[in-house]
Length: 291
Image (spheres, one colour):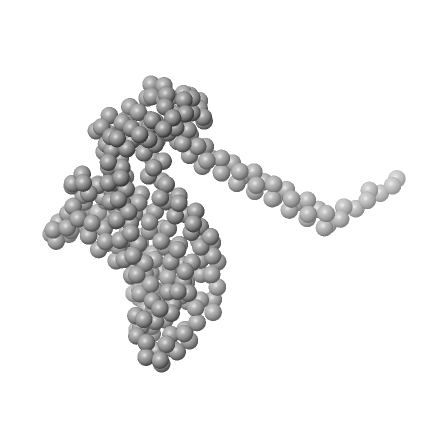
């Protein structure tokens, strides 16, 4: 009897690697479809001038039966979208500036400035991240009420000064930057604040871009806190204004208008992410590099 030719080990490993990659690609493709299908249905419904609450097709229709911009016109006519977008941009811009500035100063101090108790302070800050925001929301409301900041955007901006995640992220990122830069600058007479913003911050472009996206997204999509702290319709942010008008303005019976409002609300985040997405990967890669 003739013996079977032995299977080469290299060929076996190569086949196993190809099989693993195929499985991974299939899983990623299914995950991508899971996220894209609802998004595509939202866009299709927004541009469909024929869809009503009584005429939502099942299974879902992924193309507009009557392509039209009517839903967007109704959204801008019935809801002061421009005013709400301006309010949201104002709140988000303030949060970005204050949070990033606070994160740079605190992260720089914890990373480069030698003082006693740094580890304890960092641990204390990180422990606050374990407390859900819903737990402190009522106490924050009464605190801002005592200061007369109800229905004021300062209720958002003052809270943005304590950006714990940004502080930790900045500290981790700056650990990879040589401390000799600080020493040289101090010898030349620069202050710590100048060193942080004029020397270290320009080296953290990827970090700043990543924090800007995260802060803008969190502020733009925030619904619960603006609904509680804002009492005037003129100061509503986009998420609160659209939600209340959809409930009280009869738009709940017009899914096309609601989807059009949703499309409008995600455009700023989508635009910001498209221009800054490459910095996210860069910052994650660089934050793991040690000096």
